[in-house]
Image (cartoon, rainbow, N blue to C red):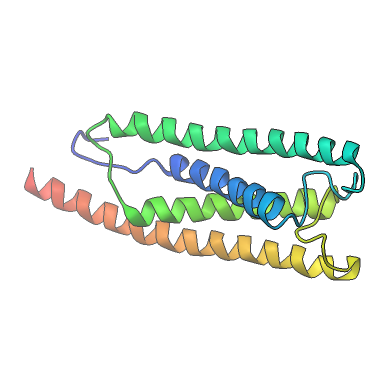
Length: 169
């Protein structure tokens, strides 16, 4: 890479998105709405012991999402100290949407569908839970597509700016 070329750290945005997706799930769905907990399909919150177990695993889950955000911050910080960092709102938001969407799709497929450890909304009738789970996956896929479109547009702008910088030097 030539010294005047500037790039955006895509992995930082994806890690931020993964972490923020987990924070949203844990804070909004676990704590505020109390629709589910980490293991609530396996251990329904019908006793203090099960509530404590679910709360413990919610904490483990939150800790892992925190590590995603810290990792993204570390990567962004390392790149920010280099002169070739290309600051782009499209690339940051796009990569965060991709990460958030990947979180939803992976968590939705593994935790909701394959393992069945919980569902998006366990306050509704059991027969209706699949609709919430599928909606969660569709929302995740929509974020991935939207993020990809933003990243594509941001990369195009990044290349254009690199071309202008080459012409100036």
